[in-house]
Amino acid sequence: MPARVADAQGPERDRKAHARYLALNVVIGATAATARAMASGTSVRAALTRGLVGGSLMSAGMELVGTESANARIVGLQIASVGASVTRNADAGVPLFSDLTLPIYPLYVRVRPGASHPVTARLSLLSAVRLTRVLTREDRPDVDWRATLASGAPVLASSRWRLESRSCPPPCEGSFAQHNAGVIVYSASAGTDYDLRRTLAHETMHVVQHTRDAVLHAIPASDGMLQRGGRPGRLLSRFIVADLVLPMRLIDETESRLRGARARDSWYELEARAFAPGGELFR
Ligand SMILES: [Zn+2]
Image (tube, rainbow, N blue to C red; front, side, top):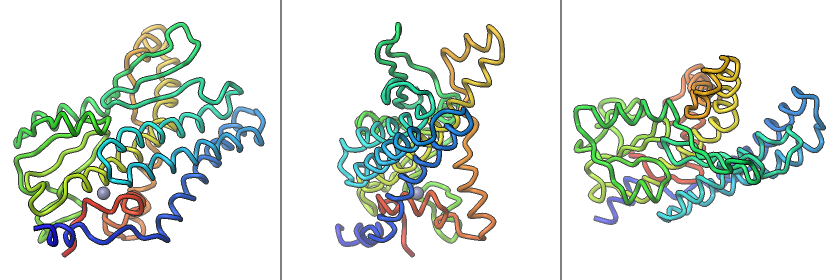
């Protein structure tokens, strides 16, 4: 039923919104980098240039995910993450690509060319908790390995026709798919009343948003907190990221609540749909 699938998946992406969110990511890069330089007392102008590069890479990564091609998902996620890493490094006065975070959820792979251990990996606490919860819940979702490898994040197939969702409350039957903390779950009706590839592109956009927040905020906050915890803290920080400080996610949730907007009209949803409109149900 290709026609019905197309209907349920909604229209093509909104060109104006797309341009706006492309620009927003460049602004986020520039602002975050400048703020870090001001806080650390380094050159604001140099940080601004780096922030613009980082922000452009974040946009480019989202653009790739938005092509809806299966292999573009993991590549887009990594490019966006490199963009966020460059933005985060902007104040350090070190080479642009000297410390990169590449997510393969539930892990954050850290690449530091020239360091004594150039490639290390740490477990995301949030992602590990989420994955455990999803794997042990009642509908016992199965890991879709092919989709997982193509996404850089666990993708699980639920046995439920629709997933319970805040953004689609009754009488809506629920959503096709969901993302939380780098873990994607999709419902059993994939390929019948929705197109899985389009939907996975949309959910991967949410993974990118989560990663942007984690790389810019949660990982440095976790490192800072654990470094202050003496020897045990420093040891822990080699294996674990307590990725709990996610201000962009907080803004997304608080802002839409204050505005009285429906969950599907939140910043994250509008941004995700501006690049990848799949994954929603029109009624
Ligand atoms: Zn969404």
